[in-house]
Structures are given as C-alpha cells and as structure tokens.
Length: 402
Image (tube, rainbow, N blue to C red; front, top):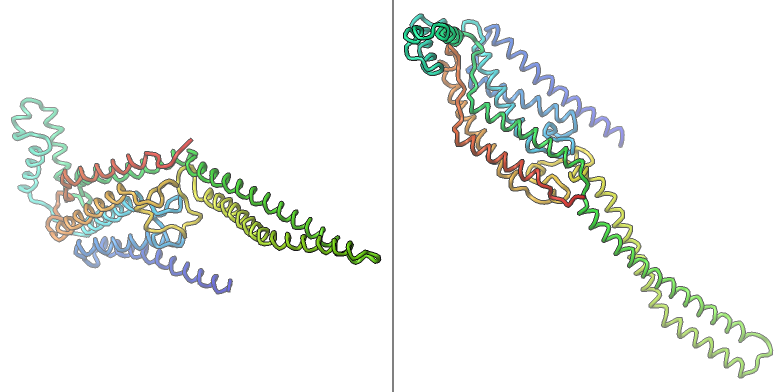
C-alpha cells in the first residue's frame, strides 16, 4: 500500500514538474519567436496565451509546494487568503498584458518611424497636455531655461521606443490599493498572532470544571454503592457460613436464614442503583476525557487569535469568505464577500477594456508609446472603500482577549 502511494506521489510530482517546465519553456520560446521576427501573433491572442502560461506556472508552483492546485493562495495559516487571490489576479493581468504589448512592439520593424510632422505634432500635444504650454516660442521668451527643459522632456516622450508602455495613474492606484491591503492584512495577522484569547479558554475551562464536578459526584456515588454492595455481600456470605456450622439449633438456623434473606433483598434493591451509578460514572469520565481532548485539538488550531490548519491539505476555497479568528472562522465575513465581488467585477470590466485596446494594432504599435486604459474614479473609489472596510473589520478582534 505504501509503495503504491509513493508511486502515485512520484507520478504526480513528475506531472507538476512537467507543467512548470512547459510553462517556462513556453514563455521563453514565445519570446524568442517574437523577438526574432519568425512569426507574428495578434496582441489580443498573445495576451491570452501569456495569461494562460503564467497561470499554469502559478498553479504548478502551488501544486508542487503543498499539493493543492490553488496552493499559491495558501498562506502561513494553511488557509486560503483573499488578499493573496487579489494580488495574484492583478499580477496575472498586468504582467501578461505588459509582456504581450512589449513583445509585439519589440519585434523587428514593428514600430514605424514617424514623419517629422507627426513628431512635431506629438511634441506640441505633450507640451500642451503635460506641461501646460500652448506656445513654446512665447514661453521661451519668458523663461528660456524652463522652456529648454520642457522641450527635452517632449523630445524624450516623442522618441520611438518599444517599451514605452504607460500605466495610467488609476491603474497604479488600484495596484497600490491591492498591495497595501495585502501588506496591511499580513500586519494585522502578525499582531493578532501575538495576542492570547480568553474567550475559548474560559468556555473550555468552565465546561471542564463542570465536567469534573459531575465526574467527582458520580464517582463518589458509585464508590459508596459499590462499598455498600460489598458489605451486604459479606454479610450474606457470613450468614450462609454461620448457618452451615454443625450443632446450630433450629432457632439459630432460622435467624441465620433471616439474615440471608434480608441481605439478599437489600442486594437486589441496591444492584439496579449500582448498575446505574456505574453507567453514570463511566459516561461522566468519558465526557471529561472528551472535553480535555477537544481542548487539546482546539488549542492546536490557533495561533494567538488566528484560526490555523494543521496542514495545507485542510485549506479550502471557502476560507476566502470566512473569518480569520477562532471566534468567527465558522462565520461568513461580509467584508470579504463584498471585496471579492468588487475585485472580480473590476478585473472583468478592466480586462474587457484591455481586450478592446489590444485589438487595435495601430494603438498598440504607435511609435510614441501606448497608454493602457484608465480606470474611472468611481471604480477606484469602490475598490478603496471595499479594501478599507475589509481592513477595518479585520483589525477588530472578534475573539475575547487578555
């Protein structure tokens, strides 16, 4: 049996290693093909291929680390983390789209050299939109040094380069919010890991004290009845022995028989009570042992206030929506639910916007660079509110502490 399990594990590890190797080699081969100009791939399709390869690499890394296909989402508590899910999704989206655009722009002769008129128009638009200068000649007459610096920045901006891929401020803010939330979540967990809970300890201690009191009472009753039953048994045995002694008169034998009958009657009356007391004693002992065992098991499931699992195998995707502490890990955390759906909605809508951009080859291969689409202020506001609520709820202790 053990040999069969080892063979299965080795086979699984081989598949995982093969998946990681194929994803890495796929990225390398794809980059070589594009950079050498052997073949061209439409940017939208290239984005999909890269996203699949990066996702496959993350899945195989997670599988190799802890045997779960979503292992990259499992944190030090051996639980699936929502903040890890968010930062992983954003990593896949941003890295894949950057590589897709960058590789296509870096292909030989992919970017055409602009005409002098296009370059001058680019400079004029840059000076107006970024520097706030409508007429550079008029501005030079007022401040020659500032005009020279502005023209230098305009020349840099309007020089064709493959890796001129501009991330909008809104996207950087969204990435910053997710990263800050990930760091903040880790910090909150670190603080709670160093706190001691008394809610569960107090409850278990109370149950244990009550169980011990019941056990002692049942044990005392059981011992009393057992001793009484033993005494009656001895009385009956003595009477039986006395009755058989030679030379006993009929009156003495009758008295001995009365003692025997009396003892047997008392034994018969006491036996059911003794049997029930014995059963109660055994049940109270088993209950006390169960509470002690449950406490030992429960104590292993926590670090400070945090709920932890013994191994990554106990992690489940349901952890994303449940509380983090021993006081609420069996409950649904609505702040997590809200943030999960906000994140999914924003990523899907932004992915659709990116798809429309990548379909436009002229925009992707524009000589002066490509601007990734910006978020709306509303979406960033929703994302910020959701993360703020998530961290605020997370920072509040859901378990009684010392």
